[in-house]
Amino acid sequence: MLGAAGLALTGCGAQHDPWFGGYVNATSYPYFDFGTEAAGQSHTVLGFVVADPEDPCSPSWGGYYGLDEAQETLRMEQQIAGLREAGGDVVVSFGGAAGNELATACTDPDRLLTAYRAVLERYDASIVDFDIEMDDLEDQEANQRRAEVLARLQEERDEPLEVWVTLPVAPHGLDEDPVEVVAQLLAAEVNLAGVNLMTMNYSESKPAGQSMVAASQEAARSAHGQLTALWEAAGHNLSAEQVWHRIGLTPMIGVNDAPGEVVDLEAAAELNRFARDQGVGRISYWSLNRDRSCDPEDGDPAEANDFCSGLEQETGEFTRVLGEGFDE
Image: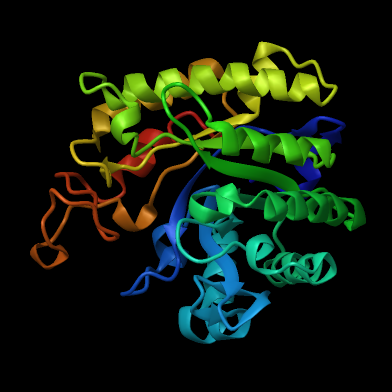
């Protein structure tokens, strides 16, 4: 298990052991018992904390449950305790594709800091993930506000805080908005552990004949060059190995949202080998909820849904394949 004591902060980011951890859609219904299903894994990424629709500076899970309501309805604290008792830990993920990330909705930096702090203290989190996409990605004022507040949050803490930013990527690399998000974080002097690439749903950015693995490898290599330049522009000349260590890869297992895009177990194994060969700092996937075959009541397995992969598989098989060689 990687805790705060395992981190050594430098001026250009946190040095950490590579880790594996799948995302959980914590508010999907029927509720997912991640405290049991993910027990024994070193990391579990819980998504997503967003702004309360009725109180933009208050954190909520998915826009549905305040922190107290999440305890009552989702048994959030008990499930997290179960993971920790089994030797693992949680990563709290802010943002996601639905709802507004707190920095987008809350324009008061002091109240934003209070909101982030409340979540970290509530769950005793030492690793956080900011999944910035959709409208949040385009809001430069919010992105700047988030960067400045995260720098303050890291500075005020007695223990290090490992910060990851999760961004969409294409085979040609990061587009302009994601590049600007990283640049703003580095300019604000956030100790950025790394950039987690959403290697999924490429749609028209991927040539029709290119496999998902080949597209993901190309995306990672393209982003590696961009991130090397971004850290250099921020005054940090990193080696190729150091930049790879600041990259994470996150595929969507099974049937993706983009028609015709599928990551099967063979592709997952190949992506895992690539990640280990390159020395990436993190591998995740969307999502633990989906790491099983579909039942008839889940709907058409050829269409992506929140509850199954759309493939014939053993329950938990993607977790084993993608996590091979990490956290050892």
